[in-house]
Image 1 (cartoon, one colour):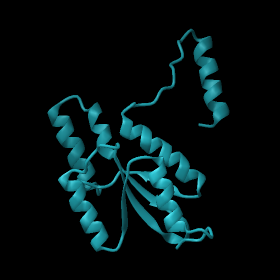
Image 2 (cartoon, rainbow, N blue to C red):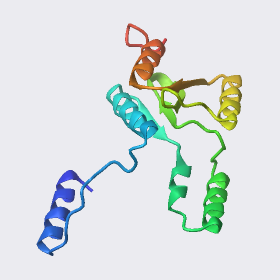
Image 3 (spheres, rainbow, N blue to C red):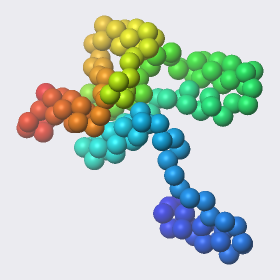
Length: 149
């Protein structure tokens, strides 16, 4: 839906007597706020960030059976326990794996195992705790001359 389409939808909703809803962040969890800031920054640097947190949708499951089904479906489609929050496609074919944590957050054992496996395969994996961490990593990966190092 285009921005104009969105505005038209709200206008029609109001004319039908419906109350518009207030757009808010889905979750004000600190880690998600940090991730949103990082994604906005990466998009501005010609990178494509891909959110891999499919298990976040598990909170909508209404029963234990629904949760198990949700998890099994996503595992069959490639979800791996411990996978990072973001896969970042960068210029020149480089890829970064990025786990976002709060300043005091810690990786789970599954996340540590995933990091080890990814690094053993030669991939760049980073744990970032704020936007400044991501900026330093991108500067290191791209280098001073704007080309990937």
